[in-house]
Amino acid sequence: MYTQAIFWTVLVLICVAEAGMMGDQCDWTGSGLTSSAERSVTPVYLRCREGTVSWMYPRGALRIIFRPSLPGYEREFKVCVRVIRRPDPPDLFHTLRLNETDSVERFPARLFIERTRKLVPLYAPDDGDRRELRCFRSKRIEAVLYVEAEPEDGLKKRVATFRYEAQPIVHRHYDPATADCRPCSESEMELAFCTSDLVSRGVIISSEPREDLDTTQLTVRLTKLIRATGRNDEHKDDSEGVGDDDYYRYDVDNVLERSTHRKSARRRSRKPRNHEHGLHAHVHVAAACGAAAGAGEFLVMARRRLGRYSLVCAPRLHHWEQLVSSRNADGTAHCLLQH
Image (cartoon, rainbow, N blue to C red):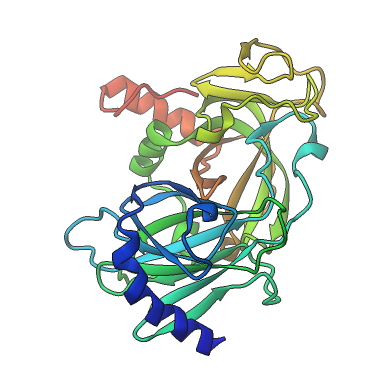
């Protein structure tokens, strides 16, 4: 393995000059069919804090250079990569049995971290580690990831897709593994309400560990949807077996778009028929937090991280109502607060 890794490192010096810059953005999509040789290495430059890499018909290797835009004083950062082995389920759904999608497929590539004169394995389909999420640190102002295609399997279509997120490394006295577990302050709750991808009142009806994501997955029954912003990849015609009543898509605040095989952007409003078919969402919390289902109604605020909703704040509803009354009365709120 390390002999092969050294080979790729040496080969880069030859191929980078020939390949040229193949990307300088948040997302990158490419095809191995355009490679001139099976051992070619394609450089990819990513300067955003988060995005998606999708490599169709992987062949040869990618050398991905992460240089996210961070404040000048933040020189070090962490990159987390989540390999996608099946399509993500819908963010919002009505029937609990639809909370997962197709069976897991083999990820057709291996990931390595570039270090001085060597490549360190980060992910391999057969490494025995079930986690889809892997993280590594930068070296000064950049991090470099190698993505090496597995041997070709005839003409079968293969796609190596992963999501990434870069976060600055903050040196503080508390344990960063549990830093996100503390309750939000009032100012943090207000900011979360104004900026989160999902804002809704809801009841947490169940929790389960997700070893593949290193999280606890909370299932929330939404009692009042205030905001839900759609994913970039959700505006496609969904014609492969999704029924008329299965789930809703959305792209603007408080407007749900019903997706069917007949018309993918038909807007309707509809009340849930019963408790089982009420609107639900999965929200993830770091496994170290030990989150669990609890009684009562909460205001759930979450942002999308690596394709899934990640909890930002979840104050109890009565606490949030008090804050809204106070902020709206004195006119100091950053946006129009609701409950």
